[in-house]
Length: 262
Length: 196
Image (cartoon, each protein chain N blue to C red):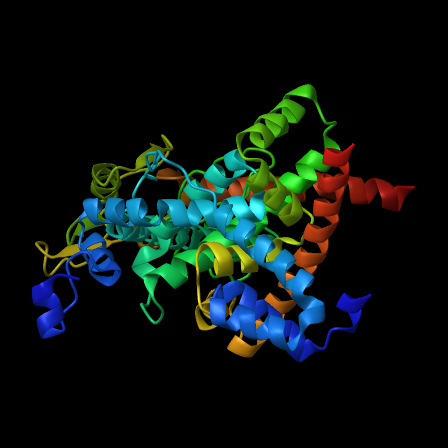
């Protein structure tokens, strides 16, 4: 009961006397507060017990050193990792951009009605609005099912040209076609004749594209030069062409007559 | 501090700050010197907080591993010893809470009872102090260990605990009073057992 009623200042003095171990302070406290003599003795014993109970170890265990990590090594690793990461980002970005551009071009063709069997050349001829590269007469290749059409890479290969001399005849002109790599089928009824391109200057050389040369031949000779395939032409006399065109009209006349008779 | 160093006011080669600088410069033996110097101090502190010698040794190793790793970041605003005690107190309190959780979930086996009995036989007074300490909170144990065993001043305790000196004084006073109450109870029990 006395402990509970002890004033805080007295308690503080008790602790100071007990912890200091000073004989004068203890005597003074006991003189002033004789009723707390027993409590002072208990606290002194407790403080002594507490101080003497300090744990000690006679042997010092060895320190287990952690693996020392060098910061410079970490810095280097971080640098290498960031370089790899950067390269990966750049590579992926380039891939994505290329992929995006490729698919955008593909979408443009499909908007203009390109089918799997058509080439950008066909689109350019048909609509005139395609962004496809310049037309090159190539064999249309069938596209595999389910694979998007890819743009045709523009070819820089030179176009074959047909060279005609100023005094060339029709047969010489056909030979010039063949010399330029064309396949030319000539009807047996075709007869040779002078084309009269530049009789006053027989050494002059006229170099034309095959389609232009074909048009020129049709203008200066009584022949039809028909392009029947890539690098393939058919030369037939004009009179034969006229007969072929006139024949269906003649066959149609009896039919009309029969309808009239009925 | 050597006589020459004291004369010119320079720190001796074995001062804590010098040992810290030597370690930071790559001298591993300087850390060994610090370890030897503070081994028993950190052990006593950890033992007071944890109440078990094996746990105290674990906490001691963890404390010095923390010091090893964090010494390059030590700003030397406070004394090395104060900084070390701060790490030791935090490590031991964390360890105490962790092991308390583990032990609460484990049944008391014969082996652990035997260990307590052996300690009691070794130093009965010390075990009674330890038993009284175990009935206190970890923070109170840390305060009493720093004050009575490591003889730290109120300012140093305040620095370790990260509070003001007045707050440290109040906390120490309360911890001391709680210890007194527990101690008196245990002493009465002890006297009753002896009489019986």
